[in-house]
Image (cartoon, rainbow, N blue to C red; front, side):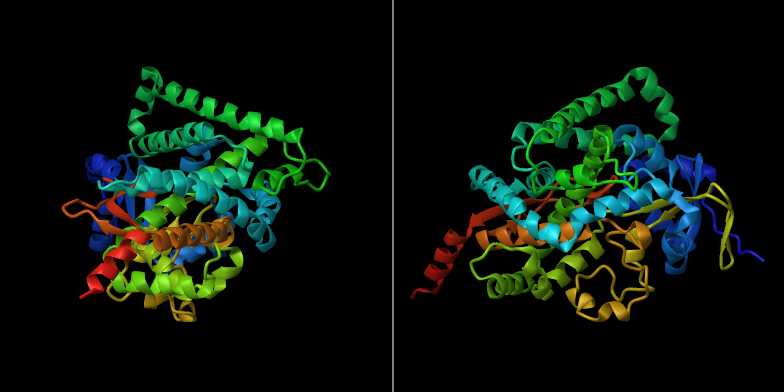
Length: 460
């Protein structure tokens, strides 16, 4: 016997398609509350999907029977069209081989080597950030996007990557991602995108960015070895002794750029928003940075000792998971308990819903870093916390992302005080990544000025 999955009708799904483009989290959360942890939904009223926050189903799809659940057409076809074949857009043996080769670029030894490149990039970004600060509030989101993108780009291509090239590639990635979301959530518009020239315009943007990065790859082939991720990709060898082609190195580089900067910039944006409302927590983090690091810049070796700060980051990623959903497609018919998954079905692992489920988190909308106190993961139901995915396809750069977040946070919190600008609407806009829809405006004050102000307040 199989249990029928509650379904949102095609008509109702189609009626929700504009709302899905605007904020899919609101739509899917509404139906999760109405129908429970697993239900059917039709993307754009056309493409059938099974949406779930059930940890048993999620574990089965992402881990236990992961071989049966490939990256969906959304990623393989839409993202592959713009980003080429790489870790994000392949599956099976091709994916396993690439994963094995690229994993070396994110081991402990390599992260320690990358720390210096990351720190140098950050110093330069903060100098630029400092020049732009004044009495007026700034939207922290684009600044953090720029910082993290420059850091990932230089971790990949070394210090010689020009600022103007970083800007072109970054802008291309953001614009193309928004287009991919529209293609996915409003599939009935795809014929129009083709005849109107929209598709061609985005392809031309991608080609310009590809040319910039390809020039760096070809140039590096002629130079002495470096200590960046590009060197890892170029040094990688298959079992037959051959290396990756320039085209494959380009695809993997572009995909690492896409996945590597937005996770951190979005996580940091939401984290600063949370900390602006949590002064006690903010002070405790500053004290931990001071006691663990002293006057040193943060390195990979400091990470295990930053326990409370790590808890705060983990709770921030729970409340605002950058990857708010993961989609998979069933290769063959499957069954998970009473739930039947027909061949070809799209399964949407609704990460945001799982992170906010009252059945797994007490007061799920509240900020509580104590949820992640050391050892608490043993008490938690597996696959209810998925900031970097889960199973064999867990994000390859998760340790890099944590190092990046800690590094930027340690510099910002020790260099500046900041206040949230009153009267603004803070709202999430789930694209490929969970972005702040209207940005997050804050006023920043240099730490020296803050300390002088405190001193004057204490004087009689």
